[in-house]
Image 1: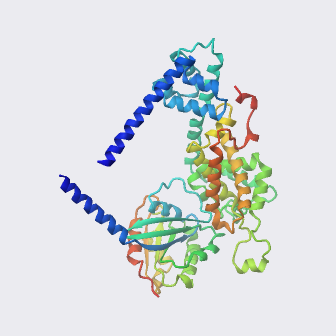
Image 2: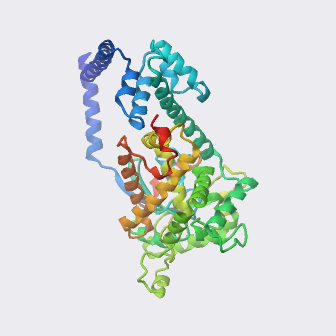
Image 3: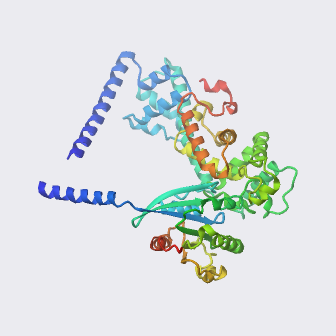
Length: 191
Length: 326
């Protein structure tokens, strides 16, 4: 019996050592989108935190999440028009860009499309994989991801890998699928 | 095995301390002829230090009556006090002061609990633009903050002038629901001069020495002090957290002579807005992106202040001073 216990301990130790010797690859993720798109809710959902007390973001939030051998450092920057000029200060060394869209806010599809197009034109973000979350699919009035992809002419993106994923940051549906794509494409940055 | 032993020792220690505490209380009771509640009332001055001691004594009591007394209905407080006096065999004719003191404490304790429930209910009610009452409050907020410029339309870029994010404030209330609107309106209506001052300061550009061309070249919005309404909703979150985490007990037990009410909470919010504004100017952050850092630092500072049992955040709002000295 003690022998068995010892073996277990040794096994545990070796796992611990492995964890220590192979530190997770750090990934810098930038979370952008218009105000009220659901960026902070998504961030908190990723970190498995309570999402019932969210307030509009002044400035930014940052959280680190462990996922599939990666340490994801997620930067959530406020989407208010006044803050958007500051987005550029966070472009440097971004590994993946996540762009969040409120699928039910049809009136602002044009505005969100314009902001996204400007981001894709940024030199510092060139080649960076982009994941577009068509958020708020829990709402009845939400547009499907395919319609948004078409409206934003996503198929014309040729200089990077991209993906559109429908999700609901509120219920968590689709969020993990999107993050799996992120982890798969972390190293797909085109030089 | 080692872990288990350590836990075992801790459990034993816990029971030992509890037993020791009981014995101490027993000895003290025999020596002074007074029960713990009496001793607290006689030895501690009224206010937060007394009420908090009474609260923890009641919660830690082995008697069911005392344990549940902290959550009775406000109307049942008098009866509860009588029951406690009976249980502790205290003659109200010899100790007339004790019942009054205990009642004052219990009113505050029960009131704080009920205030949390009331605030939570408001927070959970989302802003609904179909509800005429909600709309009326929102429009009133505009009128209080911008008395000289009428709102051109319900959906309008003008909302940004008082610090909402876009042309329709309804989405900005989010996790704070109606509580955010209630607080902002209270601030604008009851503390108008300061609210207007804070609003006007928040609209000042950070670097006024920049020329207009430079601002435009950098694509910065000139009015990037901070967004008044959004910061109000964020400070509502801060006040809410202070309340729910019991940190505000010190303040309320010191300023509210009886049960703290929603108005007390809103006055606290006004105070926090004003203090945060001064703190923001003192900290002199580079730009709005430092907001969360400054807010965290401010939160810590307030928490530290509230650890002092004599602390009252906004004594100028306190109702009649005479009542508190019961």
